[in-house]
Length: 442
Image 1 (spheres, rainbow, N blue to C red):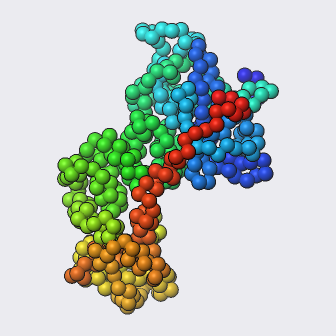
Image 2 (cartoon, rainbow, N blue to C red; image 1 turned 120 degrees about the horizontal axis):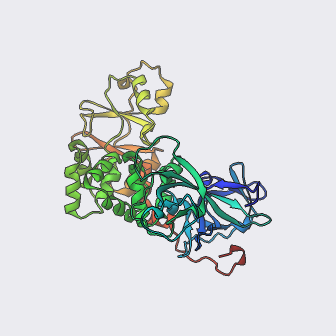
Image 3 (spheres, one colour; image 1 turned 180 degrees about the horizontal axis):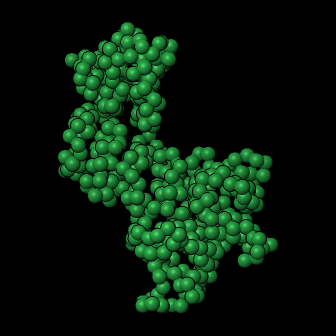
């Protein structure tokens, strides 16, 4: 490497914007594609995996990258929009190299030894850097940022270091116990839907490792954005107790949809492990036909009593964990406050809450004109109801007048779209990428 040649740590590229020569953004970097080479030679960087506006992932050859600097990637503007498909000779840096446990050979490159002192010290890969070769557009991996000690060991701060690629060995070996902490940290700022897209494109083994590293709430949010097959696969790899915890963290309607994909025996086993209150709401949802208001609704809308104030209602809708649809209005009911509630009295939209003084009682401003939905209302009628009254959520009330839940527009859309819409969005049927383009260098 020539002094002054630009070096970039790959984790810093995650999510970086990609621009054409005119300054228009074309997408964001999601991974780096490299080709491992024998004899300790540094891997060649083939290109970047870029997610464009449609969430399609394409391959951007490094020969078409004119600059990687100041938190952005500049391209020649000539992009092949065919979907990226990883080839057998290719390795994804973020998806496959981070968190690998390797051997560090501090006194030189790989010696071929595999046992004893000569095998080197075990280290964990935290990051790798790539450098542009002089007078060329070619890039290669040159450094590895490692943490000393076995994975999970408690060590003093400062025991991390950057070493040459040739000083570590084992990248080509299968890694059964590969962790995922650094990969998870790299994608920490992604929205759940975007992280779901990342997981969908990982190998099943790696997908399971990342899922295991996510906390329950984060994993629950991501599962809600994945196709059914991915949801079932990930849930099946979790320990039953943890799977139940994740289901509790999901929105009840999404948890019910996921459980509906499982065999009855497995479904009942997980429901038994869930907290009784959470399980009761999910069981209630499973008792309704899928394409009805009862099957679509969530059992956790905002419920307040008529003697609650506007200030109380505004405090509830400020909860950042609520979806915009659920935060759009509050439902006024007699006690009990949990669904199924006491008698449903009506609703108050958040715009009305903003117009009235904070001390106003909800019972004095409740809207009683809008007739609620029955749990047996079919999907087309639910859709017409929301469209007719310009609503983004609607109450579902049983024959006895108790509020059972609320149907939100996002859940309606989920069922109006084709059943495989998530799969179609994440994975196009166009799996072929041009192999004759010399600029790819692959």
